[in-house]
Image (cartoon, rainbow, N blue to C red):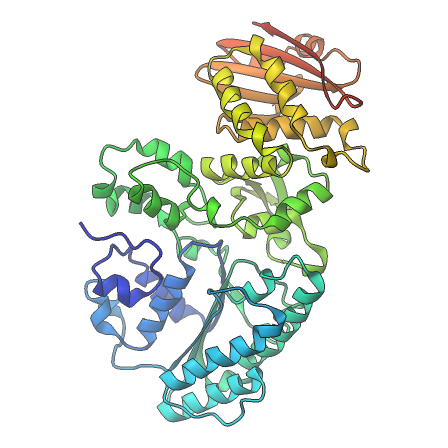
Length: 505
């Protein structure tokens, strides 16, 4: 079997090293034929860098690398174009070092193309001269490929003034692309986030965004067909439905895809289900934004947004749903046509993200010493439907929440806070969970479904009778089999459970 390309982002290395390659060259050819200025947003570790490097080798006419691939007989390899490749994928970029980084990147391109530019005083002027001289020397238009165009900004997103300064500097740099349109054959930019044209691309307003174009929905990532065919020899004996639940589910309006990093690491680690993609780095500012806005965690299951919200990342007014989608923690579950244009229902893409993200939220709230024992104990009780033993565990759970999560605010008075905490714990266990479950009689606060058993939770703050409400409204009638009705009352002064009642139907 061919070797697995774990962490390899260079097309030549994959082909010459006989690594497994999922053929994206037909998509690359269609992209080149149909566009001149292209932008693609995908989460980290999704294969953007490899696809961009594939484009580079196509334009440079490296036919020997494409033997047997879809593009080989459909491309004129006699014609080549000079390529300027700019990558911000490595390292952390600060405001102080950005100009130096850009000059270094441009100098590397200058040497590779055999050019000698005179204006090196500023990166933007060096860039413009490099484009013009490359076109003149090779008597051909230039291809510009920019990998992780937004990384210098995202590296500094927790420091808004610095991020804004970097954004403005990058805008001046990217403006030189449009100013040199007469010398350009093709321009392709990739990144995690999509900044509005006004804030970053005001000088490049002819950039076409294919991030949610169904024709290019699988430009990055592995499809189910890829996993069942190309990866079949590597996955013998594996329960494929479980693999699908754990790692498939990213939807960019084409076929759903797997993050390549997950599949490759899953195989390399002998089929151990783990959070391979998630652990490579979760932005801390996401959790801070959630806490700051007192976000109702269960809403992550069914967020409805309009198209414009997903397409614009604004530093000065960070929108949680936009960030969560563009960074890959939420994906499109359903398209919602309306009279005012297209909207989307968002949710967690798969089990890995559901478990890992909610666990990450818990880490920001609960003491490390308590978190893991409670989660494991809670999972055992839920799987066994041992409802009679849940109360002390849930009390320990709330007792483990750091005091400063309550300081200087009244969040503990809100029913939604307690529902959020319990939802995060249950969701981090990977169980089938429904928040604000709709029945024909109303909404159930929380429903868990485990091996033919259904647990229905109703939450109240202070002196109320949640169990009576479940029974009165007969929320349980929509389910069959063993049903457990659980009513929990919270005391905002004690910041914990004051009443716990249950009944089996």
